Image 1: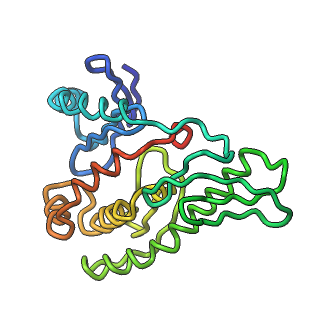
Image 2: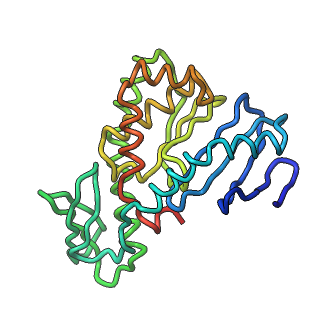
Length: 242
């Protein structure tokens, strides 16, 4: 076991567990894709024994969650060439690469994503064009969802943004009332994006995943647990989680 004042790690049943102590009210335990990393956020006053016992008590659930992530189908490494399959709003599209002079762009047509780039454009630059397209798609959808659920929940955020996130679909800074959403959500069904928006806005009413938080989710989005399972069961791209 390695340890410092706030962060340390230990192993239970050959499963590494990382721990962060923070000024939170309750301990939170989560298993993250793609490899099933186990992470604990614990109140400052929790002892190492408290934390270890809590993890051991949830060991069956932890193993089940890790198995789900490790058995998920994964996209192969992207080469950004014609014939590859890419996802947008949960639908599979075939990538068609077209060479042209001028500005790089992507156009959706039927079940195809047509990528227009100059000859010799690197794989990284082609990926950047697709990422920019995903960002545009998200930014076109998010404002209406934020507005809809701010009204329903009677809350007011102070802003939102889109960025790559390795272990979370979204996050909420309750102090700043600012929400971040994962760029990967553009690949998922729109209903999954809506679930994440609701989840983060509910954190403006309850900052932890307490019984009150669960009650609010049950009240306002009764299907949220099914949506969460659907979201975590979607295809993962290995390179997106490095």
